[in-house]
Image 1 (cartoon, rainbow, N blue to C red):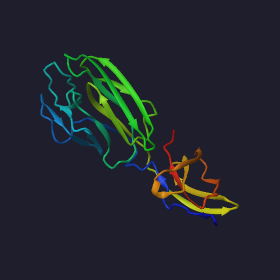
Image 2 (tube, one colour):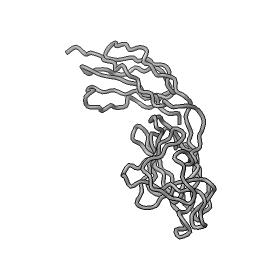
Image 3 (cartoon, rainbow, N blue to C red):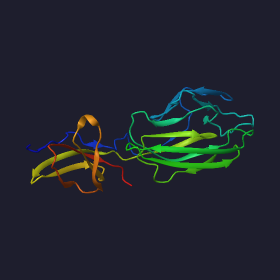
Image 4 (tube, helix red, strand yellow):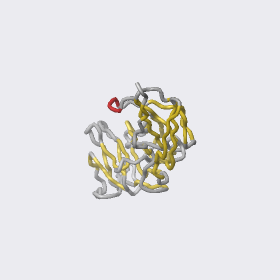
Length: 242
């Protein structure tokens, strides 16, 4: 059978985003949370971020004006009263990172707190951070650089949470596969744009949805690979910078 080389006409860009820099989620946006109240909610939106409950148990939004039993920094915040579930990500599903968060105990009756953050990337890999402390005064905790290029973050447990600082990558340049040629059972692909860090992938069956990496992540904008199957599809993925 004569070998045919087929190029999938979509290059996958993994750094599409809304803007540049950082933003702080204070949990004071609409709907207004009255002082000295606590409501269980299923969804909350602020600054282009969506906070939601994947299990339907919800999470608690607490107003300012504590009587000394709960934390009070003068603003609304989230509380992890069991049962609850909390996940957050940009409302447009772009990638993001988190830089810092303020945490405190749930109440004086539960004076110690542990918080776990699990970040998920598009390739299925995860990164985890665990924080702990005591007292109802909010303390700031910082995430390392691994908490970037995320598609969502799950928070399986925490005490009280406020002032989440989200990092937004620089806008990406569109990624285009500009040329493909075949010679002597090899294919040469050339591309441009994207993040400057790439992964070449291939499959012999689009319906399977299974792609295998060709080599390792690279900063090169071309590659020559063996192409001996009757039908092969290639794509290039733009990766977050480490």
